[in-house]
Image (cartoon, rainbow, N blue to C red; front, side, top):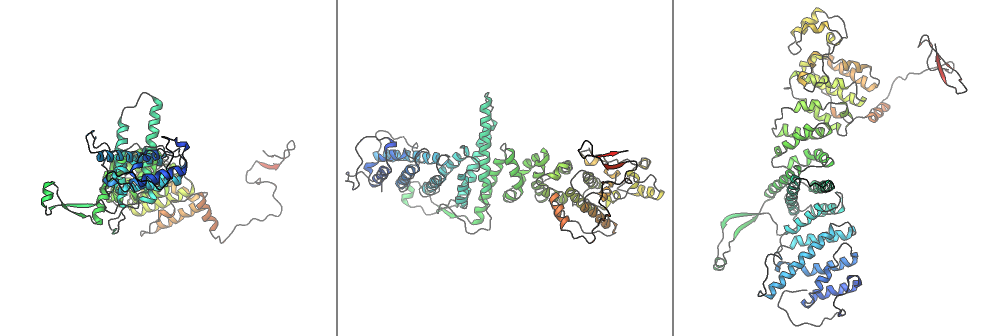
Length: 607
């Protein structure tokens, strides 16, 4: 093996020497030549000039066999001497009068930096085979493990992640999967991943704040490059497994560890330590709970910095979908997400639906106050929500948000009336969800039961008895003027109003639910009848589980209907084969006969 001891006389190599031509072109060297160069480099310092030659083969366009042979030789050469090399080749500029051994070590350090840069360039390139890139990644991680005098070399790891994020690799490249599956199970690697991604997020945020250049194409290219970097950062962050404080056995990539607790108590200092002005302290390894606390801090900083970036729409949606499960439980202070979530909730549409889960957790578990929450939630009730991808979770959260008995009557009535109006436009599966939600609202809020049977304000009857008017005047939550009864057939509910307080929902009734009794889909009409039966009971009945209907569709409704066992099946008997679709008695004055017009056989109707 190579040594840094003083030079000795040149020893005769037992291996055959290469021809003494000064520089052979890289293309003319064979694989056996590279093997001889590597063996010579590992045998004696006299062949140290083989090192730059081997470095020329660590490139993406070199044959894989050449790259692998050069990599193994250089890795075997540098690994044992790394602790004795300077920390950086630029840390000290040797002068001509310096120690030759120091100059030699500094030169070796510069060559190691070149070797490491070649490895990084190779691993982030898409030209080599995936198997070769995996070998190169393993070599880099080995230098990370022992490159800092046997400790974790964070600088090399940061350099690797920075190159991955800023490269042209796709967000689903195999390199990201290899890094996550092989190394993210180690706590110290996850720790430094959070630190590196936080720094990278701040760098990208600074680039976003810069003034755009006059060149339009350059701005577009810069924007696309930033979006690609953000996608790769999200891929890395989302693949780091969360750490629980209860974990006792922690896997570390470096055995020495990085989680130490420094105490202020000084140990005994002998005479040599005084002369060298060195101090010792009691360094104890942190407990698993202490390590989990530090990991949570780095986790929080990394995610908060990442969420400040201009996220692409696809990343934005992926973050919102998993935020309440994968991020909020592990933040040191989840309320820090309030600005991000309120901005997302104010956007409207499907983005607001996705942000609802996380925002609901902050409001119910972390004390977030959001006065406009129900106004925004009311605005989300549109026909398109019943065809959205995440509608099942939305309806379950909607039911949970309206569960509190402290909601004012006008607010519960506004949601009840809005849902009832939507039942006229949505598919049958949506109508089933609406009936379940209306049922639960009427059971939780008895003050809006006046909406169930209000014949005077809906036009179902033209006359109203004096007793109904008197009971109407005495209702505290349903107080309106008597002139409502003079306007039969008028629904005072304003469906276009975005503020629930101004919708006049308390002056209306649920005539839309009564209309569903004649729905063309049998499950809907049957469900309405069951709702009427529950409302006929004086006592409070059990609430309906919205999750049983929230993920419905045409397919689920059809499958449930064909599996339903029918006791009586209607049958039709004909004495003779029918010749027309409708009989003359169905449409008086019309006759339906099959007439052959110009040989086409078309059916015509005559009067």
